[in-house]
Image (tube, rainbow, N blue to C red; front, side, top):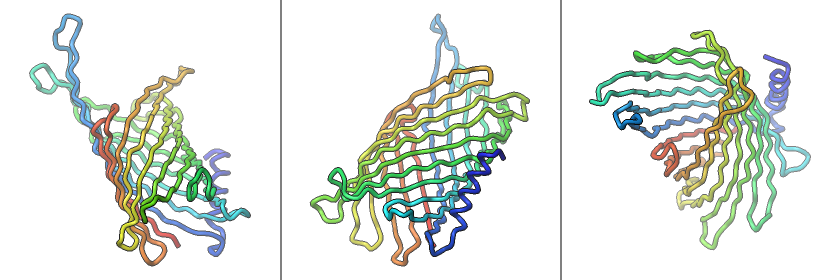
Amino acid sequence: MNHSDTLLLLCSACLLTSTATAGQWELKTDLKYTDGARSDNTTYDSSGDFDKRKVKQKRKSELETLLTYTVESTLPELEYIGRVGHLFKRTKDRDLQLKDDGSLKKDKTRTEFERITYAGLGLRYDTGKVLGADRWILKARYDRYLHVSYGANQLHEDAKARSGDLKGYEWSVEAKGEYSTHWPGIYLHPFVEYKQERLNLWHDDKRDNIQEAEMEQQYETGLFLSWLTPYDGWELTTGPFWQRELDAERADDETNWIWDDDERWIAQLKLEYEAPMPGFELELAVEQHLNGGDKGERRYNLELSYEF
């Protein structure tokens, strides 16, 4: 762990070990499953003869556990947040190359694992009544990846193993509004968010070479509609949002990033429950990619949180 990692961990620990009367603890568990879109592409050579056919699909599972501690600043609208968490990702990467008759030529299918331990700092600011809203909430956070462990196993015949440790970070800024309407219990929530993730160059222990550094930038904006149902504690939210994702790689001997750009519209439906006794909350959400490179991809999300 380098000096900046140690400093960030100490800053997070200072918030997380403050006296219990000074702030609010929250333990959150987030489970996601993504059923990736299936692609089936056939290419032909210059003479029009069959070249190759590729079939690909990814199915991802993620489990994240996050402990936060929130304290108020001298301004009651501003809160500081210490964050410590662990994220486990599992991806079943199906990658087939078929012959002209549909028989199998190569099978590069494998299962990838990624374990991320991180610590970070964040802030939350309630602007109050601005731009005609009941309120706007501004959020920002920075998470340093203290350790990232990556590996690929359950390899099929033509797949190659990979394994190594790396470092990185992720940060984001977000603004979300809340507008009441003429209908009781109905609210509008416009939002905009920017997020960036960076993973450094790393050594592949299986093949004894240096793997590319990676960067991802993501822009999101949308408008959700929420309904406070007649049932105590239950809220239903739905709406579309636009997402632009830019992915880049850079090899050890390169100075410029190689970018891949994709845009899509995503539909979301979310059901939230807040228990009558303060502390417990539950979220169930489904997202569907309506267009873009991952058209047809669907994500299911279950989130449980407890404040104490």
